[in-house]
Image 1 (cartoon, rainbow, N blue to C red):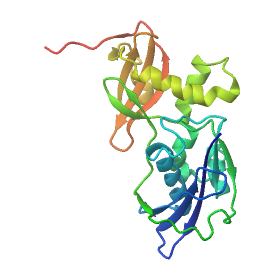
Image 2 (image 1 turned 180 degrees about the horizontal axis):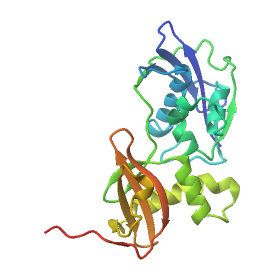
Image 3 (image 1 turned 45 degrees about the vertical axis):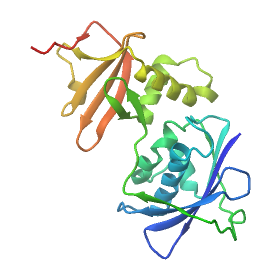
Image 4 (image 1 turned 180 degrees about the vertical axis):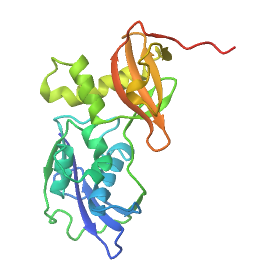
Length: 248
């Protein structure tokens, strides 16, 4: 089993926290000094979430290119983090910080342990620092476009449309891997959509369509200054899609 355990401690500075972590059952492995400059409530929770994502995706402390599954366990120090993972929290302001837990790592087991015994007295030789000015997006690479953010809603719709018979225990893991594979396939190219309803569902946003030619699958991406590039839905291609007009 892959394991990441974290515990967050406040410091004398209101925006700075120490996040102890380990990838074993008890022995501490390190400490992250996390400074949250974003102005929001529950900064200690945002600090722990940011530290978890950093350890999982940047430091790869429990494996490279990891996708959350039933064999990966995250042990956190706040029950609010588990609620965010299950999408049962009323702390909507923290949802962007937990995006990685509801997308790429949605399939993980999450439990809570508020105990401090496992790191009491631990003094690492060096403490890494992490600056958090805002939530970090969870993204996939779309061929010909680059990184676009992904939400749990997109994954939910993807499962409903394309993975209806998958084992529930493997749904989240399979959906993420499959979506990454489809989006980054070399056959993906931008296409245009004709018809009266083109772009109407995403009025006010720059809408682009990308076709996975192998699977005849459309990926819809919106782009605006506040949200950046976002994958908003996927569906089977229809006759309304055609190659982009060539430049004169």
